[in-house]
Image (cartoon, rainbow, N blue to C red; front, side, top):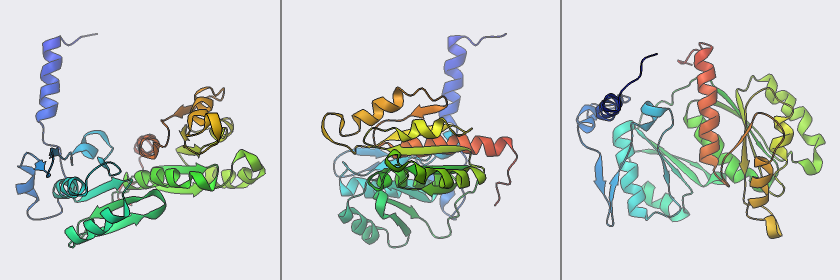
Length: 274
């Protein structure tokens, strides 16, 4: 078996970073945009959008909007739109949505109210379909916002997404039929969002033959509240096949499930043109 020297490894890494990723050709001016260094500035800091991330690693850049200034969000969105024709923003404050509509009137805004998320598309943008299939399950209705965030990301990564909500362990009989129907669709991975004791992902992982991503949510009472009990319960599972993301990390859960599903679809030779 041959081994690269350190110098060779750094050279390969340098070549990777220097390569221009292939971007979706969605406007006559796109070639000129690709030649720019994608350096944008807001009123506070320099902002470097990463529109090639999805081509490079399969997961698009997502703007975390909860703690950013409105001007920063708009600037980052412009950068992503110029490079890929789409911008995804999570945890968006209501006033930012209106500011985005005013600042980007030539683009189409898709809002996901429960998830507090926005996706902005340039005219004519067509979402790529991979053939991957992802299931999203929430234990309770209070877990739906984070579950919806995971669903949105999986959809934007080209997957077909099926959601089952309010089937937690307090009424476990509610899970059986919806889960059977979900498996019948041929899902490749399942995200299970749960707060409180966080038991549902372990239950699902003990029943299904596909990878399960546990998504703890910051729903609960007392000492174990804010998702801590749910997180520890999922990490301590004895059910094989369960992996866990951080508390309320719908983006991480959705992207992980979509990466799995898309690789399965690719291996099965799914028709990506659908």
